[in-house]
Image (cartoon, rainbow, N blue to C red; front, side, top):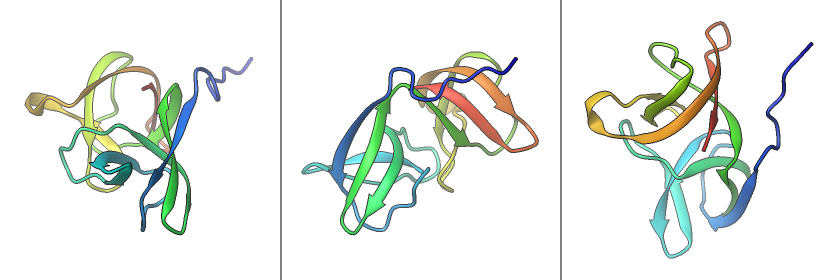
Length: 114
């Protein structure tokens, strides 16, 4: 039996944003725009589709992202951007509380509820 969280509770919005990579976490930049996150930044969602100067961003629901550092444990975890498009444990820096439902150490991915 396999488990899938794909599409559950997914809410997306289109923002202005150039030069973004699909699958990376982003932060609000004002004026209806998003931008790539630096290391330690709090993120508002994940870029799903990027074309020219616009980007569809998933802001709610389950999403699978890359992570760096130790694999996040299941449960509510504080995560922040890792500066490489993925996430990492926020530690003392605050971050964003996310529900972690799966972490794949081999693939270095984590599935979270935004």
